[in-house]
Amino acid sequence: MTAARIAILLLTCALQLPLCAQTPPSGALDIFLVVDNSGSMRQVDPDLLMPCTLSTFAGRLPLNSQLGILTFDKRVNVVLDLTRTTSKQFQDDVAAGLRNVNYEGSRSDLAGGVERAIYELRQRGRSDARRAIVLVTDGILDLGSRSATDRKTRWLREDLAAEARSLGVSIFAVTVSQAADFELTLSLARTTGGEYYRALAPAQLPRALTQVNERLTKMAGNSESRPSNPVIAKSPIGPSILVRQLILGSAIAITFALLVLAAVLSRKRAGRPRMFGQESEGATIEEAPPEPSLSALREHGTAVSHELAKAASLLTQANSQVRQFQTAVEHYALSNYKVLQAADEQCFTLARECVRLLDHLNIMIQRAEQQGEPCNSLRDARSRLCSVLETAQIEEMPVNAGDIFDAAVQTPTSAIASNGPEGVVVEVSRKGYTMKVKGRGDVILRASEVAVSTSQLAKRRAGGTQ
Image (cartoon, rainbow, N blue to C red; front, side):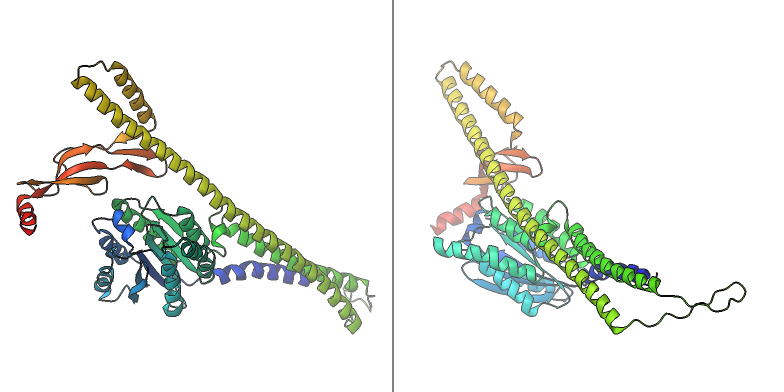
């Protein structure tokens, strides 16, 4: 019975201690903000709104945090070393660092930016802090030549992602362009236990960064444990089940070996002769059993060693199967995402072609009416096409003359001098359309093309300068 109690006690300890060992320290958080400063970013943020949005993001970080900032184009520049958020000059230092974001750089060394952030966190980060990289980019790695770009892409996807995972650095990627390499950013985020977000218009960036802030706050508050393998953390069964299965398997194997030892000792004890003396008040006095011999102990030790060797073999097989399962889940996730992404792009392409066809039909109907020609068939075709667009939830974006110009959904085609306020829509030259997609909100198929008002004074100055 004593051996059985010891086995149960050891089983309880085996189940509790590994779980306790996995609990990371709470509170401290070191973050590096990696910002794409390449010229291609100007296409998605023409008004340079990102620095202000990133400054707001920095101001909402948890208290016991440190933030560093670097920008990258063909070069990588650290514009703010790791700085505590509780510093009096923190917001001023962040603003000064973000003034370097101007989208004037050429090329885009995305891999170099991630590598430098990992290095800074490893060399200057706190040993008891969780680590994270927040990557804001158009998702395009371009070094000028195909061979150099492919080499850096493989380095980022394979080597740098593995190094970040081994150092406990979670990467949160925010892509701001429809032309991004989503397969690369998805793989990078999932491999390191982070997440990726899309902000395909400047107005969507604050929401994406708010979601990143929420994840970082949870990390700082220790409300989620760091996964041992970030890829499995995204699988349907979750990391806790696999970890518990491995721990439970180890504990059962150890307990089984101890129970075998207890059973052997019980059989030996039961086979020993008992010496009885005189009975007093119905009680039987039993002599203490003799101590086991050295050869008996050696025999017991050999039996236990065999059982432990079998248990170790079972654990090795289980670990091998888990690794194979993890690899299969990762390949499935990436291939499934690639298929869905291709289907989305085909759907959006077809929707844009339908919108162009509607434009052509409107022009043909207008010309027929001006020339007095019959156009009933054209009107019927336009009606059927409008029904198809309505079924696909493709809608025209409402914009009228007098509305405030919105760079997120409108493209200026010309500037018209006016005595009224600046930045007001004067004329709509081409309508814009959106498509509702479940789980993603409205996708902009085509921005509205408008003429925007400018002041008479600015117009005269421009003319004088010329």
